[in-house]
Length: 421
Length: 111
Image (tube, rainbow over all chains, first blue to last red; front, side, top):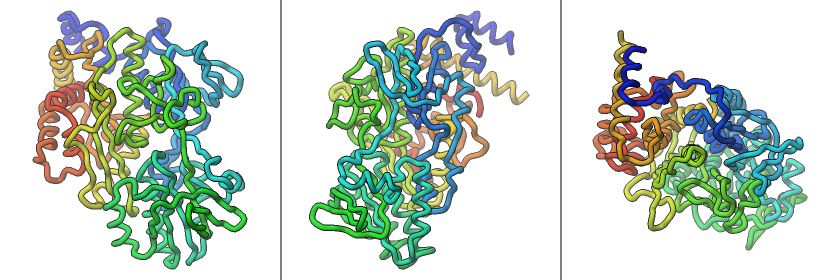
């Protein structure tokens, strides 16, 4: 084997081809560049790992404020009592295998002039290239009364998986049979377009089994179901008749916690339990980079570099997405790989990939066994200067099915490993 | 014996990929087809090579390049009736792009 390899190297492949054969050597030379990644979600963790996997000469530090990773995908099954929070909680320790330095701290500011990230504990991290992957933050101020209802723990979003997922599950368990549960959806764009409808579906299954007189009312700020409409409607009509009531154009504009009433534009709505998903924006650490609708970060889609600040790349839910590009875990992961390649190119003097292709697949559970998907492929268009959906690519499930239920769970385990193991 | 032949196959695939890139941009100094590497990394979202015990979704790294390419083309051309998502995703890539993905995947270690 070694003889064969030497002969091949002698034939002109070059010593570094060894890396291709799984024999990447540990370099003692100083790093050729420093990358800081802010945020260890699906985008940031993937970017950090893949930079080191593809170019171990680059020093990569990942700043993450949480001790563990809690997955939003599959968290609706935790709400429905079909999975435990432990099942969707993962450690960051696997990134150490790639030489990613994980700093458990909160990034408090980006010093663009000095190319440094300031941390809550007072340290600063210098960078040659910065990747900002903060996800979304909530705009409680857009709904008067909601901030107080949230901070008292009375009204939860559970739109970042973790403690709120567990707390909302408890509220759902405590809801008496016959109680009305309302899910409020903000105007798009928001994290995980089909997520609220998946939540309604799997909770309808839970209600049907344990609280058959209860109802779920979806108060949707949007004029129609945002994603997988026909598939969700069919599942609701066939599996949970009479349980889910869907109300379009029903934006919650104010919340009165004392009477548990949500004010919509034309009426008041009372429920026994509310789950209000607030309007969203790019995570606040990215505020100096925000350039679209005062909410999202504009990026150049070949490299995901901020349109406002050079050497700063932004990926995931925080960006102003290209047409038909969802704020999803899959997409954030895929952007993490494109940005890893672009950052490596910049730091090693190689050309960037001028025509990236990204893909997305989002699975949604309509019951604990049956799943539907939406998929798309996005390719750089030199004329439109953005990523556009490749004509003829992508699509939806033809019908809900158990095979994709198995795929969805396998997908979750796979993307967790792809980002963190 | 089996291990050895799979290694030589991988080696061959590596060499073939390295020799075929030529003018295809962009590649690393070592001849890695960088575009194909990123495209193949998209496959890894579902077909991850890391941390897998067994999965409902098959592993694809380290498989024969020609078999992988033919399979992708069959998905793209609707010749796999049981397809759920791959027939939709494969249509987003030109045949040549699928061939390069297959070559890159074939050159990776078996999971």
